[in-house]
Length: 600
Image (cartoon, helix red, strand yellow):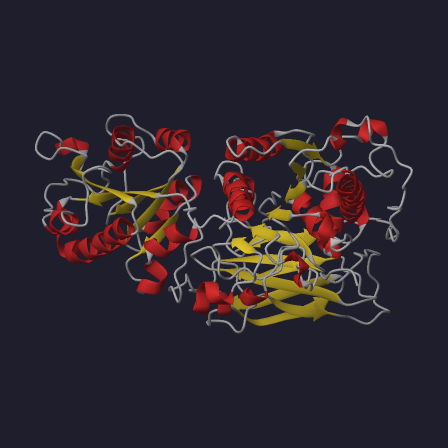
């Protein structure tokens, strides 16, 4: 879901007429006379793998292709036969049981998409065209699962879904007999619910952050953000239907920066983290999780780590050298101890390349070891540097090209510097060149540790490579690069220091009404806040006061602001109920409101 930034100087709400739809209640799942003998989707195989696509996706589009390929690759030598079905693929024949998953598009690009998005947001995904799609898809899935299991009782059934498709899967589980499915996989579910991530109070950590894996829900499979509580549409509570029948069967996956299911966000592009499941290998990981569950294997290891450390060795680093050396040693040692591969390079500036070459390899993925890395880091000497920007882009490009990256490994570059960079660099390497090379390799995520005043210069590099920027003034719990890299493969150790909510609170939220204009004001130590009105996400604002017009004062209007920390963490929202006398002359704008909770 991509939500554009809104200047929010003045919000003039437009009338929108949306009719409620009736809930589908009973499924005609007892059609014993249905004959599937000639239906190729009902061919009995050892594994039947089902997929529900995301919003607006075509049948057999890229997410489905990656999902199918992951299972084919993982089970190719297993001796098991596989067959696949995507919900909605039988629409031309009337679907199954008269149902066919439509998966309408969301967003703001067309009126139809906007209506679907708005209906989903204000109703918690329960009603309007989005809710209709979830009901249609879950009914199709329930019909298919029951009849396939009846025809092929020996088959194992795996059903997975992405985004709206994940919501369809989690809704399906509420309708079916658990014996009809062997494994259910959700990716980026907007209705994900993890009670261990429930906020307790601002400035404190959640149980998931404090206690690690010992506090996790049984279905939490890859959710590296320990603050994740519920999806953007509110969570199904309980997510596993409250039955232990799904223990070991239900597996939830939610990427680190996926605002649809998680709490960390990218303020520049809300779709960024949500759109990376296929590229980041999450479907492959899920297929391997299923494989090991079927074969009860204890030998499976999550993807290895490749961490390349790029150390600024210019003269200005002299007074900061010990601090950066300590951080570099901590990161390098941590991953070498875990069996990961580490490379260590220094860089300078191309303008002084004749004296101080850039980059300089101290050791690569094959030669760095626990034995030699401490001395190599401690012996780094700084010199040169005749200007402030350095040749980070050229050094990064050359280093990434020179290294032998491990296929399937989680790949990271850690930059330690006190200065910015040339763009383009002195040999014409640009930021785009570095990002494109990063993506072509896997991608390679960039994590930058630098001084507070320099940090904004690295925001784009970190964002475009799905990394992060840290500053030297933060305490270790906030500046711990190792924790962030670990989070990307779900490797939080017990009692690991989480990335805390550094600066993101809303105070003194108030309003004043003058005619049809409502003046909202508040104080906050957050740079950005997310504004919602009656559960509709309006966008971001940097303003601490703004005007809203044309609210319908015949009812309460709930105005909420959610702070966003400098680390990109969505904070606890604060709300104010804006009311006025019903006799006030206002325009007739009504947004239907429904709670973000599951159906009874």
